[in-house]
Length: 617
Image (cartoon, rainbow, N blue to C red; front, side, top):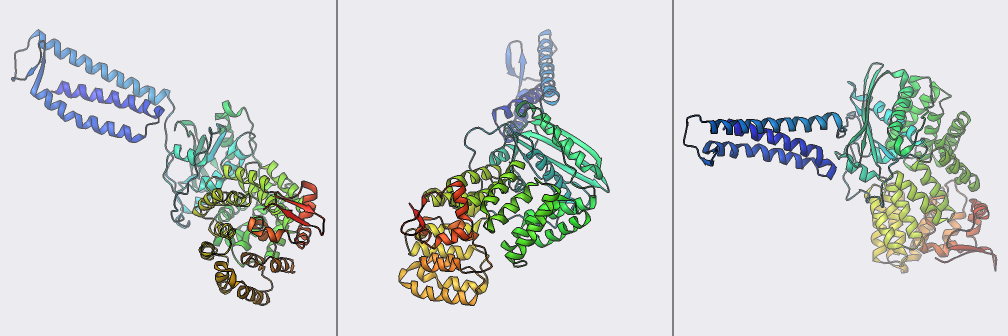
């Protein structure tokens, strides 16, 4: 009975070693190996019971009748059983040694540790994952996950994020390497998913993760590069350095990764720019950049930290550029700064960054948007192209490139920019949203509905609901448009409480064109009450194109960018064909852009009887 038990254990070990080595190559999940172990362990008891009831003799199996005299035949059978057990053990040891020392180790990402003060993850949303990428995944692609903070002080989470993001930024500048956006890769922080699923969601062939441990000024960073297709480790490394050597450390890690990918990427030399010699300024910058990525209520604190960083080192170009981004987006999230104040401060910060580093991509991108808002659209196009040349893996720059094209009515070219941004940042709702907008402007309402639904699920709620309302209004006022109107009011958090009453008063006209005169009176009164606000969009929603063009041309401090981003829908064709729309186009630099790059898609400029646009939709 003991011989049978030992033989069964040796056989079990051999089967488990073979399964652990071969099952991953066939795509079997780890659960299959676990169930095999459980099954073999449970099988031990029937084997022992069988060995107790029966014995193996030269004549075959027979019931065990108790102790027997030892015979040469019995001794031979026992020796054969022992020999079989030894062979099984040697095979098991051999397979285990091959798995441990010859084949690459199969790893799973370490759990991510965050500071307790970090904001909770957003509530789950229905089916937010992007579809699997069409076609094969580019083997020259990588995602950098947020590094785990293993420091005794949980407040050092910003340093772990900063190290990961800096490595991501270095890799993004390697020619031929596609790097998933920070927004998407860092959004997986709290999702316990395997490397294969991460690769599927982000559309990448390789995944880098690691950890950072800080003790005073000592850093220990571990990192591993894993193939998303095979779940096998490609490279791993551990680095112990002084915090003052952070830039050298980033260069070493990035160089090791590019060396590991040399077969598909080619030999590359990685260089890291030492952004600042002031360690305190660098830490303030990392904290501020982390808060900037969170947007919303984190922006005031981000601005304060970045202002401290630039004060500590006035030659810190990256800090100035990030500060410019914070200032530019602030009016979209709060009333702390007016649009005009934010634009001036952002322009000053971006200019400081570009004096220090003429091709700083973030500063160029902010400058491009500011130039577009001033009506300098040809200059804006040149600036955003420079930003993309300096950092072709920047999803945000691709998005802003597309926005500039949409404002000018170049819908097809905008689609290409948004698709590129979505490929780099596949878990961000804004890219699906603008792809949906392009589909709406092109007249493909079914595709637009799906894209906007996905954008809404990923958090791009207010703009997606507004574009869905535009789509519904293509069929005229009615119950469907009314429902979409209510959804928009619910989702758009930028509508102030006092102005919400004006919006709600338009509901009857959205459902019934006969209520249009009453809605016009409400809007006329709102223009008098809030002359600094732009009411053009609401005039358009109730079908008053003449009143909308008058409102759009009325002098006021608010930019018309939001109007130009949505006015290419078919429901606004009459508005665009009004002769006075050309005044708006002239004022906002569209005419110069069209002279340089061609008329807007689906429209052409005509001069008779008066200059205007003639549009197909």
